[in-house]
Amino acid sequence: MALLKTLENAATGTRMALDDLLDVLPYNEQGLIAAIAQDATSREVLMLGYMDRTAIERTLAEGQAVYFSRSRQTYWRKGETSGHTQTVKAMHFDCDGDALLLTVEQEGPACHTNRPTCFYLAVDGDEVVVSQTPEVAQ
Amino acid sequence: MALLKTLENAATGTRMALDDLLDVLPYNEQGLIAAIAQDATSREVLMLGYMDRTAIERTLAEGQAVYFSRSRQTYWRKGETSGHTQTVKAMHFDCDGDALLLTVEQEGPACHTNRPTCFYLAVDGDEVVVSQTPEVAQ
Image 1 (tube, rainbow over the protein chains, first blue to last red):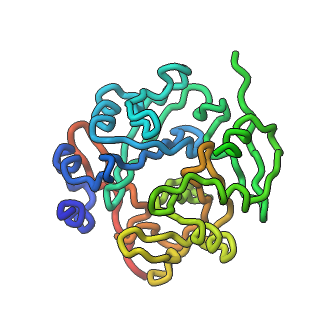
Image 2: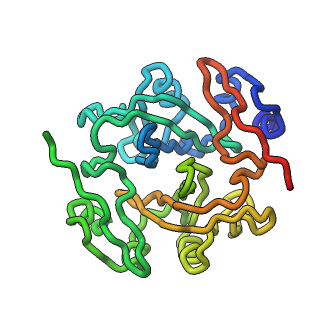
């Protein structure tokens, strides 16, 4: 964490080794940090997943988002079965290192329900409304 | 979770009581779900925080983002000391209910470092670069 604290006051353009940052991220008890995927074009927030260090490194090496499934306790390259892959254009870590933001080119719908994004349950007063329509498979 | 599964196949426009959804969210062992804040105008992803049910209800009642601080184990209305408040324009839950997306009007910089967003550590090959400059207080 000392490194992250130092970076808080570092000048714009300051560089460090990625490995040194990955060494000190405050991974949770399962070894994970949160990973947000945002569409590079529409700027929609598509989904939230989780990554451990290996998933982060695989995502960067493969150029496609690889998450760690907490329910299945395994890695999954987004789209490996659906074809709805996320090509990663940028990755940013946040100030305290417990979250990262992926800027992606999303192939097809991001949600496993075939809706464009996972955030389709809109609060409207004291109700929630289903606010997106699943895309019909081609 | 049965309710969330039912909603996966619900038609667009289907409504339900917010309380019923809040009853079944898969809060983690600390009673929290992830909360992403996105700027309504710039569409930048600003930060990731956490909320319990009370924080969600306070956010909706007060119209400003109220998070639960895991490090301090207390609620904090974003901006209560800095003035950098988040006025909430919309709230969406995701398909599996473990994350929500706030669409906000951000007053001033979102990050406690006075950078516009918390996601200022950009991956560049095998390095990380500090990619945003803190705003100077007026």
